[in-house]
Image (cartoon, rainbow, N blue to C red; front, top):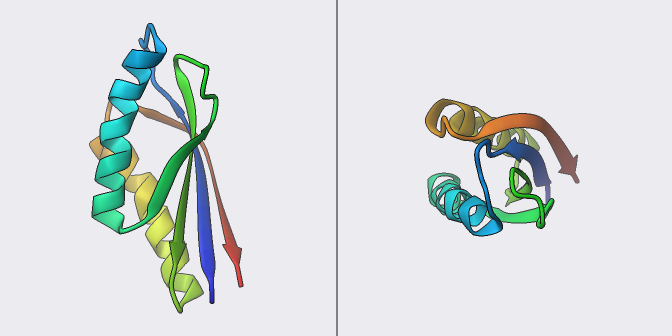
Length: 95
């Protein structure tokens, strides 16, 4: 059973508080979960106002499908969420 894990470091410029950061980040996480049917959570930089590390996981019977799906997540963020900058991304495939 192939599992794909994507970690994405995001910059949320201009956030002045954790409340503001979460207010901007939560709609993105909810939308990604609906659009791509993935599990997603903020996993690091929890106390940072302008940075977030988000992890996404997808499970299917095809490793290539997992890879393509997770690459689409990154592209979708870059194209559709202009107030968030993708700083770094990493995809891991586990078989």
